[in-house]
Image 1 (tube, rainbow, N blue to C red):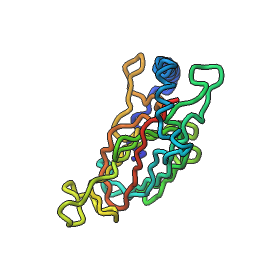
Image 2: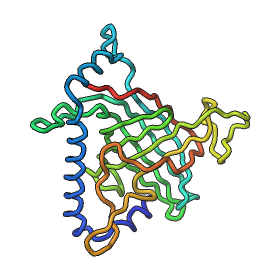
Image 3: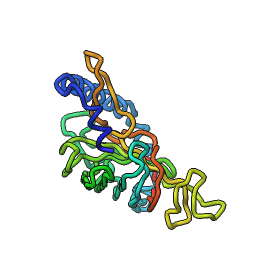
Amino acid sequence: MFRVRFTARTARTARTSRTARTAAAAALALAALVGVTPASAASDTAAASPARDGGRHPRPASVSGSARIMYAYAPKDEIRFTVDARQVPYTHRFPGTRLEHGLPTDAEGTVRISHHSAEKGRTYTAEARVDCLATGGPVATLTAVVTRSDVLTVGERIGLSIYQGGADEDGDGTGDDGTGDDGNGRTGARLGFSWGIGNMALDAAGKPYQPVVGTCMAPAPFAPVLQGGYEVHHADIEVR
């Protein structure tokens, strides 16, 4: 898992300016998106929000669990992702900008990664602080900033996607794709991570590098879960 990531890291110097431009463009696009909601529409939506019905706040979106996945580039390795994330809307503020109140997808929590390399006989670990979470039914995407790691760069953002799976309809304890039962009668769970199969850009010389991961950005959940599972609780975006 980590090996493939490092082979994609080339032309570090050239990527610095490109990364800055990418981040700036993303920030401008996001600010524009947030700023297009008319005040009256936002007010009407807020008035009808369940969060303001009787003063009770609905349960926020969340995803939690731990699972071992099968990564096609390292099928013999034992790779496990443990996730505990929940939305805390409008808490990551940027004073003096159009995002001064934060975003509805602001989140908190922790991601832990353990990767035992069968080839090297060594276990690599990483831990990251969750900063964004979005859900849609049984699917969640989240990002987290690395706080400790043997191999990942501290301070960089990583993206994860999770599909919690569906009902084990034939009752055999396995999904049609060979994924295992998560213990709650679900099979077919999957997880994706930003450095596994994509997130590539080209520098001015045409050489590939990995750009900055934006908040809540992650590929589709491509890696099947072999053991364990995740619970995704969906909640609609809270508009203020």
